[in-house]
Image (cartoon, rainbow, N blue to C red; front, side, top):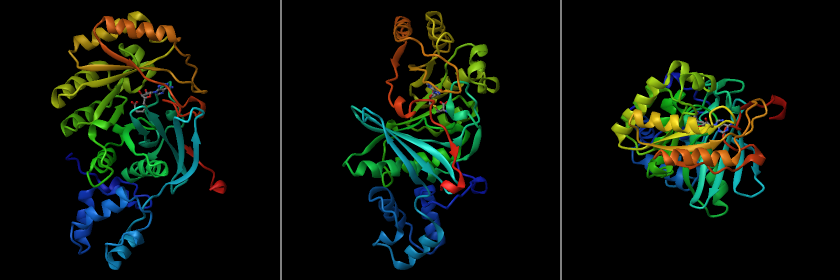
Length: 363
Ligand code: SAH
């Protein structure tokens, strides 16, 4: 991953050490007269032992611990709410940051392990008409450390049960490709073998379709699973659901997906949210199959039954029609699954997360 972050444009809120990649920490150490191998020691303390204070890093000199203390904090997130779904398989965390904004993170239990759905921005400016995260627009970018910290916080909750986060999805609030450099830094740290050490194939990044960043991400040649929120296969319908389609219409988006397939050799997932009466007829399933064939794409389609958002007036596609849509795609030779749903009762399902600013007096 070659992109360099522009430090000038980073918010640098609270200076969390989690924002530094292993490489950046090595540079910091050298600039402070310390050997670079200490970066690995510090990473082990932060990500494997998950300490909360620099004082606990007992194999570092007192002088270095003092320097770290003066320059950084460890986490800048405070857990304000931790809710469990009735079936016990989903947990939603509400974290407050230094400036009073809150973000949501979701922990899901699957048969194969635990996955964490992280938030990449405070709010979102993409404006998809079916999603709660866009209501109120974009408040600010998250620093990579604030994203890393979500994973550590959730892992610490799992530590109590002796369990481990096994996969990560970048599908919480925000558009990851609208915060590209911080996302790349986040991926480096969670993937690093002295960091959280989650394999790239256990990480999924989802975008609404910011085409130039799709080319950039393809060129990074990561093994990360890559998903594009498609939702419709005509420009007219897609622009209505996702205004980003006006800037990057299908004839720009689909070739970028082809480039991704070719450059990385990896299949891409199309997320297709079924919105009752909007995009869920068998004809639309056939049109989706045709687009995939016409552009000669290597695609897996993941069907998402739309989740309720009070401010949005979409209705769910009935179960039987979801199966019909799936069957039609299969008949067309398309690889397809239906996303398993969880976390509705605590508003933790897809599209239900939102960013809020908490009132000062309640802090
Ligand atoms: N911004 C990124 C990632 C966040 S959302 C993106 O757009 O891909 C993860 C997925 O949930 C996206 O496919 C998104 O379109 C979908 N989604 C949003 N609102 C939803 C809702 N109300 N019901 C079901 N899925 C929704």
